[in-house]
Image 1 (cartoon, helix red, strand yellow):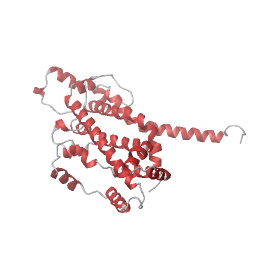
Image 2 (cartoon, rainbow, N blue to C red; image 1 turned 90 degrees about the horizontal axis):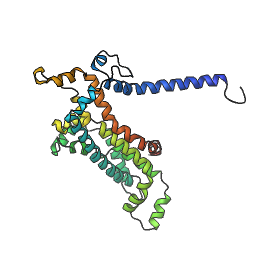
Image 3 (cartoon, rainbow, N blue to C red; image 1 turned 180 degrees about the horizontal axis):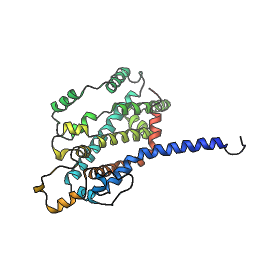
Length: 296
């Protein structure tokens, strides 16, 4: 083996590894690239399944149709409202539950009982029918609260944040006790600022979870004007209309687009908020999830 540099066999292995990683990355990105290309291709090329990763016969017909779709932007606003309400509620409740659970039994008697209850709730679900009946019985069916309140306490996020707080030095508690700080002050002024990486991680989980959720909207929302974006995309991609109800301009627009192309355009627009948000929180993500998963 040469003294300087790598041997020929080592370089070959490196090339194979890099080639494999590039292939995996391309396979992961291919659905997104294909959806992007379909959204900018005309209906003939999309219907013939000729589009791969580059648009064929570039067309803006799909995006022009979305610009005239009031329900799309209504659902977009509902999803933003859901993220703000649901994400904010999850943020507050996750902190308020994770902090006391991060204390030991001496500081929080009965901690193990609550911990077991949370773990059981994470492992075993009550079932779809009891979940629906509960939402209906409290009178929040067909409202934004039906999408927010059932997910107000994400157990996985609580455990992740709790473990991060438990990894912080115990001397912080002792120093705060000597200064006469109470539990609320320590939580708000000490543990929350030090837990920013974990908080950014659980916030990202919360936002992505609320933004991408569609199944609960199908079951709990009956009014189309109250549907979140992902539910609308899955349910109302392109409605079939009677020929005599379509004016000539609408008919021309429909002829220029296909169901798959319009669906791809809606999916691409729905990805924009997450693509903007994720880079802002990415630097906290790995640090927070690693430190939050090494303990209990």
